[in-house]
Image: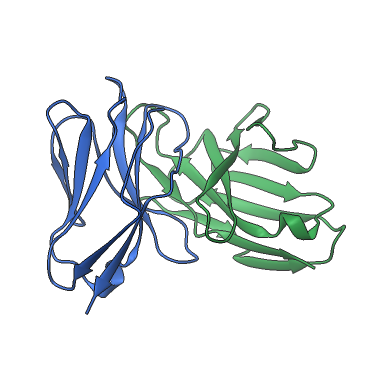
Length: 117
Length: 108
């Protein structure tokens, strides 16, 4: 299947700093990518939809000024957690659909584990 | 997107078939049934999806009832590496919405 990568795979940062996570589709182009967050023992929760060439759309309750999303190209989306706090510690996962049409396949990255001290 | 209902957990003996059920009684005509699994601390892995016909690939088979209100994912010969949380999701175009899934434990 198609490959989606994330970088870094894990990061530890101090409270108040910003962290950037990259999501790349390696062998296909993605005009849309999705960002999810997963807390321990919970399921994945959709945070936002990243759109190439336009603003991201955020799910209810997700602060757009805290979680900055930039879809820089057809193969790259970045999520920046600004002024991170311990409650932002989580497993962040991106995904990309192969076409965006009904019935397409969506592939996930391996995830980035963020720990804020 | 339609809601799905899955058992919380299941056990399966290694080498036997694992049959994971999913109810999606409110599925609409243009919604596909997707199956993913997540092994601990990894991103979800795509398994299979279908609209109304049964599907098979190298990983699994997907059986969808004629009324499309339920489906079953079949892992024909489960191995210890198949121990994971399995998610059944119905969607048309938007992002996948994850429920709680079924925790499958393959026993040696």
